[in-house]
Amino acid sequence: MSARIKICREFGGTWSVYGTSPAPVSGLPSLSASIDYACHACNAAPATLELYIEGMYIVAHQESGWPKALVSSGTGETHPVDKRHDLGETPPWSRLMTWLRGPRHFTARPGHPRAREREASKVVSLKLV
Image (cartoon, rainbow, N blue to C red):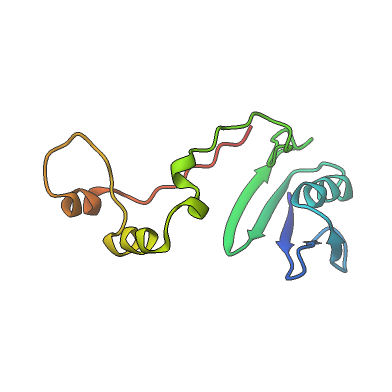
């Protein structure tokens, strides 16, 4: 039987882990520190992790030994930032107009943009490494 562990970000910015002991462990500095704590607390036994991160709910299953890395370090590959999306350089009226127009999907398909938006599905993909 696998353990059920809940990891939450608290209002002060610290993290809490529930389910590894009778009382929750709080005050952990980061998500990765919370996952490391949970792994050590259950001796890397199979577990179901419930992550509550700023309104988002994520469930991850770890096998014995916890082979999946759920978070990566900040020293990994960096992606260049597109200057056009820097809100500090865009005038407020331009951001307002963009918001009022709504999202646009740039495709080569003909047709009215709003009709194409209705066809787009809202899909989120999470890759575990």
